Length: 63
Image (cartoon, rainbow, N blue to C red; front, top):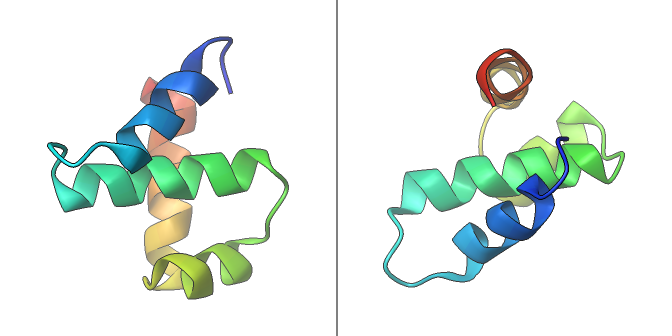
């Protein structure tokens, strides 16, 4: 995770004005940065493991 991204991602997970999908993606990235496994993230966020992998890869490639 790039410097400063953690604070912004955490803000997105708490903001009531943010689309649910964006907050969900932010939570995936934050949990990954904390060392959670893809399977654990999928369970906590309520998505499939391939979805977690996809969003982690997108963040790694594009930020």
